Image (cartoon, rainbow, N blue to C red):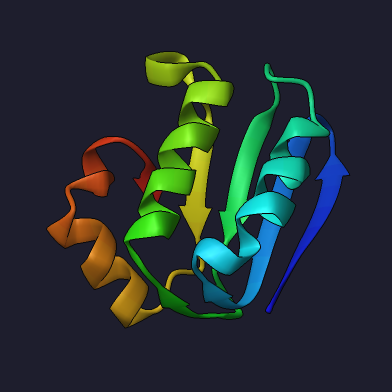
Length: 98
């Protein structure tokens, strides 16, 4: 499990490899706090195998950091299981999900 980041044109991409759970909380927070809060954020789930309720909380913290209702946060490359979790938790109303 690991968190990796990249930035291009004020778009900060955060990629979670493996499990997105409380064990990556510290690394995840560092990943988005390194970027200016007015950045656009992209969460890349292409290598994410699992997501739990603590991950949902971390996504909400990212959204708050990025501007709350005005935040530009996209959740991309979500597998079927991740999409189901986001749909059940109504996160599709808070984030652009693909």
